[in-house]
Length: 229
Image 1 (cartoon, rainbow, N blue to C red):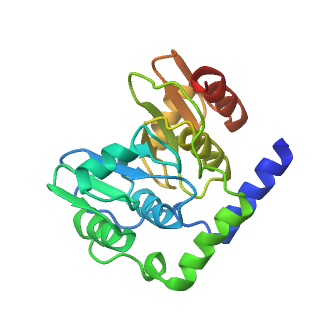
Image 2 (image 1 turned 180 degrees about the horizontal axis):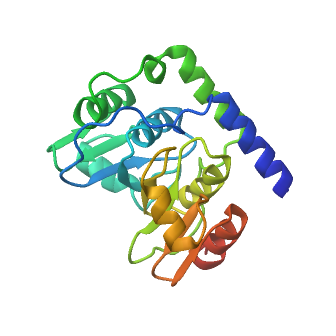
């Protein structure tokens, strides 16, 4: 099963042509928190995460898989409706639906203007849709879990097949976490190396459990053993 898990995640990364692996030109940094309500299997949410990685941003993710009860109601209470993704940019005082609008806002505020064409292209979007087919719905539906008292933290980048495996588990368990994006060229690779002894992602920090670890298989096992119900 591990071989199948990894191979299909690699195929999903190939389908998206590595988007979210490299940084775009950067602009000012956020002055407040970025909070994103989303779920892993959603192609519109994936588009926003790609933009977040390209802009080397840190964002608090509140997973809202289908059937989830931990953050879906919170998102509806804030925005008045249920579509995802839903971004809260506290520093800018802006809350947005619609992935294209969110991407444009992120690049206008934290990049150097307009987003690259491929992020909003319909053809590119179809490649993102194929990720869900390769992953057979992983990260789409909620599983019973216990709620942590403080968010976890994850270092990784969108197109990393191993980071995807961890994000799917975090989403299914509805575990809130801070995504410290690490696209190629990001200074956060140094943080990962200093904390974990090697520059490799994914890297999970679970402060409540006193655990910091590399390796997607070990992280996934830890998440389900610790937080699964």
